[in-house]
Amino acid sequence: MKVLVTGGAGYIGSHTCIELLKSGYEIVIMDNYSNSSPDVISVIEKLSGKAFPVYECDMLDYDGFGKIFKENKIDAVIHFAGLKAVGESVSKPLEYYNNNLTGTIKLLRLMKHRNVKKLVFSSSATVYGMNNTAPFREDMPLSTTNPYGTTKLMIETILKDLCFAEKDWKVALLRYFNPIGAHPSGLIGENPNGIPNNLMPYIMKVAVGKLPCLSIYGDDYPTPDGTGVRDYIHVCDLAAGHIKALEKLDRIQGAEAYNLGTGKGSSVLEVVHAFEKASGKKVNYKIAPRRPGDIAECYADVSKAKTELGWEAKYSLDDMCRDNWNFIKNQK
Image (cartoon, rainbow, N blue to C red):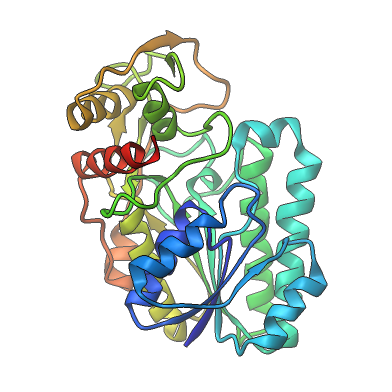
C-alpha cells in the first residue's frame, strides 16, 4: 500500500513516516517546510533504510497536489499538513481558515477525482472545548475556543458529511492530546521555528540556555499542585496509533473518531521536574496569570482506541523526557 503523508517532514509526520516504512508501507511525502526542515527527509531515509518520493508543495497549490496524484498510485492519505499554533490562530484567523479548510477541501477533491477514499486525519483534543469533564470520550459534545481548534472541528464535520453522502469513504479522525518525546535515536524530534508554542520545546530551550525562563500559566487550579494537568503522549506511541488506524480503515463505516493519549494526566510542574531529572539541568520558571481558555484538566478516555484499534500508549513520562533530552543534546 502506498500512503501519501501530507506534512510528512513535520514533528508527528516524520515519526509516522518512519513507522510506516518499518511496517512495510510505501510512502510519498508532501510538505511546504513552513514549520519543518528538508533536512528531516535524509534522517527518515537513514533511520528506515529506504528511499521515497518527496514533493515540496503547499496545501493551497491544487496543481501541485494534482501532480503528486498523477505521478504516484496513492492508496490512502494520512493528513497532517496545516497551521497549528493556537495563539497565532487567534491573531490570524483568516490565514488559519483559508489554509486549513481550503487546503483540506482541495486535497479531498483530488482524492475523490482519483478514487482514493481512505483517510487518516490529524485532529486534536481541542475539539472537546471547555465544557466537558475529563476524561474526554469520543461521544462527548464538541466545541472550540480558538480558530485553530475550530478548523479541526470543521474538518471533522466536512469529513463526516462526505462519508454520509458517499458511503465508500473510510475515515479515521485521530484526536491527539499532547505529543512530546522524540525518536529514540535522538535524530528527530520537535524543533519548531522561532519561539515554541508548546510546553516541552519551551522547557528544552530554557534548559540549554536559549530562552531565559519558562512561564507557567496559573498555579491555582484545582489540581494536586495547582498547575494545569494534560495528557502527554510519546510521539512514537502516537505514530504507532496511525498505523493501527490505517489497518482499521477497511473495517470502518464512514468516519470514526479515536482519542490518542495515555489516559492519565501530568501537571506542568510534574513535566518540569521529570525533565530536570532526565537532563540533570535546572529549568528556571515563573508563575504567570492563567491564560483565557485554559482548563484545569485535559486527559483522554482511551478505551475505544484500545478496543477497536488494538492500540495503547507504552511510553512513560520519564521515557518522553529522556528522549526529548537526547534529541535536544544533538541540536546544540
